[in-house]
Image (spheres, rainbow, N blue to C red):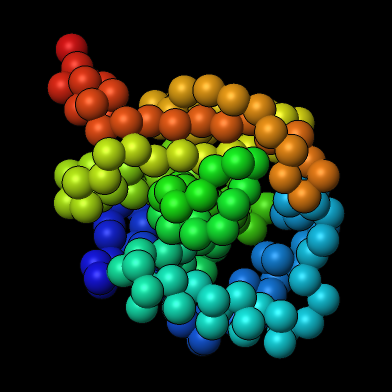
Length: 184
């Protein structure tokens, strides 16, 4: 498993139990869960269970969501990464999903775009994946824009946890074509 990724502003590293308090601050905030089923976590124990699940993904699949650490002050600001989805969601199963979540004070600063772009690069250039998918609540305009900005294209709509989602994907060929033409 990769030990870390770096962007210009951020370190992306595996989530640790020492991140629990910061993750609880993020995931207990109703604003953060507005487009995630409106079910913020209630206890630190729930977060520890989530961290355990993420760490299980690292062991089973060699990948998972990573903590995003601000290089300026070494603080946890959220997470971003790939996740292998091994359960059926909207008639899809056994695929790699790209996702992100941040503390509200960091929204609107291009962080999701910067960190998710680094994960796509890793997915296609290092893991040699054929495709990456993502879903976003149809009402979450910011997340839908991020997915489009990093090169994913809309291909379907589906309901998950009683919420209507837009589904996006990008293939390795689309990624390579996109990166070959950057800077022109």
